[in-house]
Picture 1 (cartoon, one colour):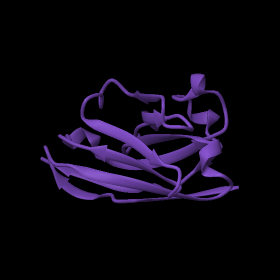
Picture 2 (cartoon, rainbow, N blue to C red):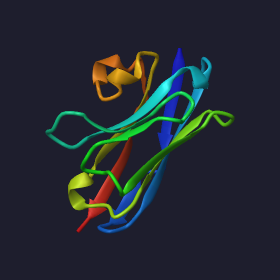
Picture 3 (spheres, rainbow, N blue to C red):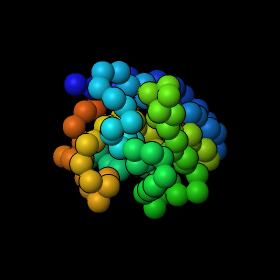
Length: 125
């Protein structure tokens, strides 16, 4: 089992920045590739970003490319998502997930084995 706990969400004005953290405990963090997803009210959960086990491979949704940065610290068992130039339409609950499957499936929700409870990000206009 892997337990994931997100933090860092909150209220921010459009154009502002936030850094989300996801702390992992349980099994060896470095054995899992990690992803961030978000779910807005009335919408499906969508992929935001993913990072490989070593951090050497990174992938972003087109909508956040150039504004968001995913990183991980395997010594601290934590994955981060730095978000900048936030937009009101990015208001959502942000979830981190851990996956033991292939990098090929980094954008596939059902390929994630563990999820955190989410952290709310609200971007005001």
